[in-house]
Length: 290
Length: 300
Image (tube, rainbow over all chains, first blue to last red; front, side, top):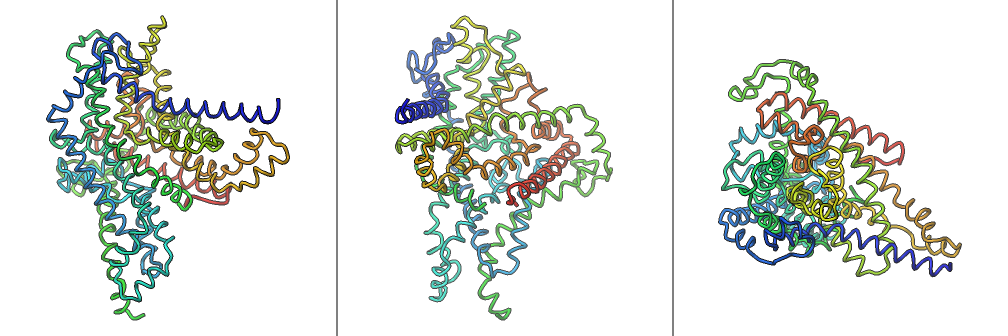
């Protein structure tokens, strides 16, 4: 076998394998979308795999006309945007001063922050703290506890350090205050890393679920993931009791559950491709420096 | 620089820094103060300071609980199996992606491979149910139509473990390639050309150039993973687990949640949390020490 043919075979096998892995990643989504669009009869008879059968939009109509679901979606969007903005403000407020080597006490502040990456009080003391601050059943319990991620902070600090100091120095000589230097020089130069961290915070909040499970009892403040979890959990319970012969007529149709899963996934999938080109470089930087 | 001019020059920075520092003191160090309830007979109405000290009594009780040991064992077991199954996946995938010559195919595959990482475990739980449910799941439907017996993916030990591991690979393999691909961008292309002149095959180039160049990254990530053996995320075992397989799916984080917030045994749950934090710290420092010995570079 010549070298060229063996190279070709390698390439074909390689591309095929990667393509199969991509399909493996996508197939579950495709199936869920197919279920969400199929008729109940086709689903229960197990005919649906990757193509919808007896297409209808009933499940989506039901999701989009469910007021509680729409309210939860709007609440989750507002919550995600507000959390992301606050997280970014606090992370920038911490990162910028900590890049200044002449700042007295800088090392101490770094230790105070880094220790929290390796040791924490655990969820019970955290719960009691939120309770003592009277934040149970308020949006603050979903925003404040995770305001600054030390990991994201370190990524931002190392990015800020890479900005040539001469730029900031010349601004300072021109009489610019620290605030102005930060706003008009440092931040505009940091857009890629800002987009990366904002995406991390936003995805974390959008997907976050344990905190709402712990802190939120009021159905008006249920984020989407908690609502969804209750549906999934109900599935699990009915699935298990079905084994013991309970009747299944009370179940919401499979297509409705699938439509809800799609409904809660689409917003992230819409935002993600726009930010992808930034976060790969952002993550790489964090990996190299961190 | 005089004190006055130092303050004039730097007060803005301290003002900026004060906000996040207050955050850390309240929301990160506040719970550390609360850890003392592990040593107290904690009573919600008397509060942290009003409750009585009981020394290590709660520790004795926790260490006598059968469920504590089973959740500790499960934590180790699931983390270990994840290490065996999920750890090599992104390495193999990254090497294969690196070997792809078509730029557009590579870009498109990467974009699609990252997607599962952005899906919450709650949604993954929903998808897993749709696919692997005993009655209505697609996979069992296919098996049945082929005349095979359905597999209890979610309700029996062996199949459940496989489902758990499989979802881990699905969720993280693509995303995990980022770090390895980043390491590979630093490889000197001339090495490959030289190897080609010497008549090396593709496999040989992978074994002698590509793999060694990502070895430091592999070692670092391996050590980081070893350091996380007792810490385990809450969402994945909680969502994929269920009452039928609790014996295997109950891990330290779900155990703490269950005895603490569902049964209100705050002191016992705090003890387990503290145990987890301290052992976790020992593991991290230990693996950092090993890392410094082996690679000459630590993570701390």
